[in-house]
Length: 274
Image 1 (cartoon, helix red, strand yellow):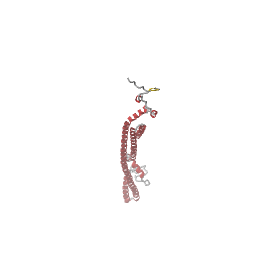
Image 2 (tube, helix red, strand yellow):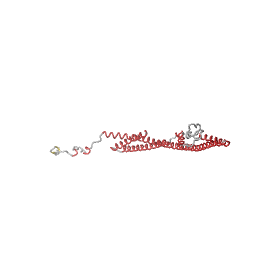
Image 3 (cartoon, one colour):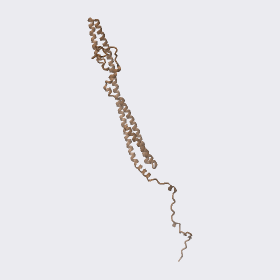
Image 4 (cartoon, helix red, strand yellow):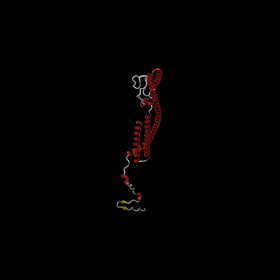
């Protein structure tokens, strides 16, 4: 029998037969990985919640933007409607004012004739009493005719509250006892115009200035709603960027979108209720 050769020995013990039989060394730890702590569970959970809620927020903001845009269009339509009503009232108001001015002008002409016939009647009746005889009778007849015309004209003066109405001349400082015009009391055109406008009921029912103010207010409200819709569009941009990016930027975009969206909602409510 052949003898196996002796294995060389070392002071620590028998030498291993080959390097393959040596036990593997443990991997060396990365000092940077050991020094950087992992993200906390709370932060990861927050990221997941934000990531899940961003699509729903985008849909909600889109609906809000559509509602605000619709409200802006309604305000513009209302402003146009009030502007048209104001224009119609203004045209009708001018027509009625022209009619009132024409009524006063007509009264001024009638007053001139009233004063003229009153003076003629007074003069002829006075001369008839002085002259007498057939000539006096003729003057008296002509004076009576002029008196009748003057009394008729006095009844037509309406825009000064019938101040020259000869139906009841007693106590009327503008008239003589017979109902004719007493000189020294001219026709007050300003009072006549004021009376004509006050008695014009159709004129009081027109309000072009308030309607124009309403139109301006609705127009301004439409502009405000348009600006609020632009804010909602900005919120959509922020939320979309928040859905794309990761990490801290996601939270920043989502938080900014939420803040701007809340501001837009408050502005919408304030504008709607104003």
